[in-house]
Image 1: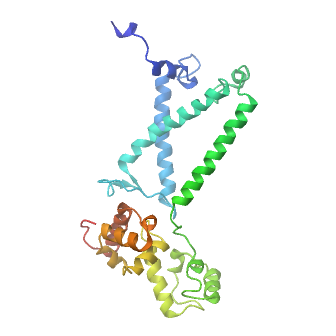
Image 2 (image 1 turned 90 degrees about the horizontal axis):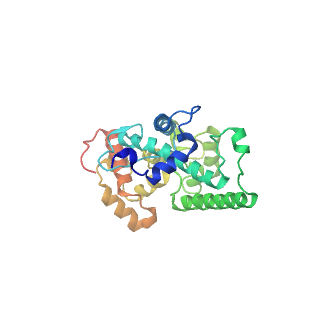
Image 3 (image 1 turned 135 degrees about the vertical axis):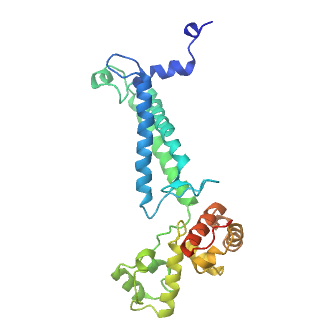
Length: 275
């Protein structure tokens, strides 16, 4: 039987029912719209990664075999995922449209008014469920995320390396973050030269990509105090040491620790051997 007389596939019939894929005189063809959406996903993915590139708190990707082949922070092959992601977003929007009685953001105002729309009770239930799922997702991310890398020094080391006068001096000078503390040339009032030197070493370590102040402090207790110390280390060994001392939840993945070591080797000019 020729393909022109074969029975249409269920997925094809479903796609043809979507407003943006209908081949009507006043709308583009489905294939042209598909190309637009794929290109739009690629474009917005690039903008997304551009914002991520300059951010201090950012997404850091660790992909086996592709950690060195990156454009910004994203492995080059990862950009191929943005066009399908755009189609996924479109599919979700149209799935929500199934609960709106046929109304769609792609239809004109007159077309939407001619449709029944969503019942008030159903709308309340759907929005309430969405709100609860959003709260649950945020709570899970908060619980599973380690302590932020941007903890102010005045909070983390108050009562340990300095007292109130030192904390007040850091806040007054705007040197309460690791990258701003490194700009100081001399110890502020209330901070001893010994503590100042120790904090500088911690801040240098904390500025290594993906590490942060908390992990730098933990590595210091393991005898890893400088990028040179880290460059000579091995990721599995560090992972096991952190896990034994601070627990499994505190130990970063081996891939993340390997990223620290590669960054430390670039800083120190060490050979980039196996981490």
